[in-house]
Length: 434
Image (cartoon, rainbow, N blue to C red; front, side):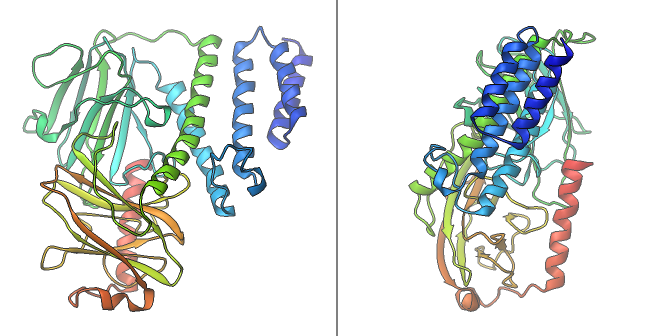
């Protein structure tokens, strides 16, 4: 490749980073035409162009709503700022998935959907682990579950936001045979195998593991290792430019699909449900077969709060948590009480749970922090529930919260709240970052 072509590529890339418009696109097409002998660089030019166009759409003002196809809310500066952050997170996630964990012949388990790469309404009580797999292959998953509260293992067709909906049955901890030390072995294959076995459908491409945490101080995270039978002691093929081009294109599709898909999904969900009212629970295609989900979209003025009365059924796990209305993101759950599960919740003597959704600390247990968002959604999950929860929600003046709560609800001091949040900070940092 000549120095002139390389220089042209650098100039156009910088133009794509700091400028926009038709001139930029024309120049990028010229570079692509000049680099037909380098499919990797052509793919990189296309990838950066697509990411730049997504960024421009995210930062567009209301006048550009029609041009964006209504894909993004553009309601406020906060939506736009959080959209750019979401794009950055998805770039990181998409590139990791495609460049380091995309070979089903040599699968590698990856922790995804963390506090800094969240997408698609992640359960903040989960550690999500996944690997790329291929129908027709046989895999062996080994691990240790000593001290682990619960897990959910399944295969799936692909990612929901790409329209790849379909999942296998879910295996949990009770479905696995463990020795005295907590070790287990699971075979994932098309045909039945001796011992613990999960069937792999021909068109399924992902093996996923959800590790559940309810006691954020004491629950263990387990250990897992995945191997394709036949790859032992072997190495994958050498990386080529053609492979790089394919991976960049697939990553771009994944990133764009996640950003647009979940935004549109949230818009549809908020339209379908009634604001400030509880809705019935249901299963979700592509989710765990042992879970039921429910939602409460809210629109809460600064001087208001929502009091939620819940009679929970017997269940192996349940939780309530908030999500942004724009990106279906879990927000800052390390530094704020945006989620409460069965272990963290304060239960009244009659078995009921009283949540208070508010913009500021109401000084009571079970505070769901809105993070200052007037509009968002609460999602609740129920694993292996023996019946459906009874819920009732009402919007009340913030100053009158105590009038709507039972008298036995205790006061939570500022120091107690800080200790509560410190537990969250320590746990999230340990779970995802060291």
